[in-house]
Image 1 (cartoon, one colour):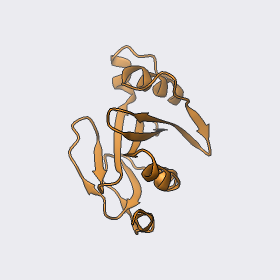
Image 2 (tube, rainbow, N blue to C red):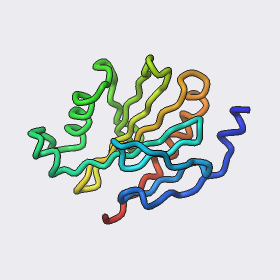
Image 3 (spheres, rainbow, N blue to C red):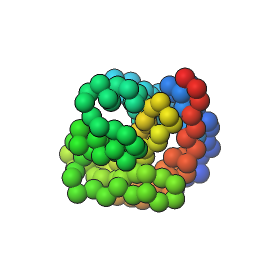
Image 4 (tube, rainbow, N blue to C red):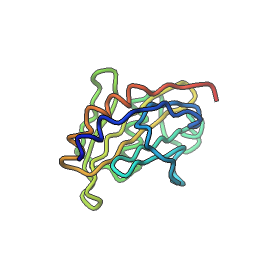
Length: 148
């Protein structure tokens, strides 16, 4: 049954705080007070968080590049210290397992000038993550930004 999930059709979602992304067409918006947008289809959850560069400076964080933003994000959140930040195939990302929730997270980072973005995907670890891994990277590659 899970194999048929990867073959579902996709659509471009817009009106997401200045970005668009292509995801499965069965995604529905959900509430997440900490995110710019959040969606799920019951198997995978995608979340986008937009951070204003100027707001980061006001907090006293020294963030002059996307790499600095990634480091600040890791330090300021409940991320395991032993994760590896990968910079391959035009992506800056890391993944980790959250044992308390039995989830695998893959976090992608973007810089579109005035904002830094985190686009995070979460799914049950194990077979479900293995099934979606290729799709997650494909979806991350569809991220586009507009003026907002």
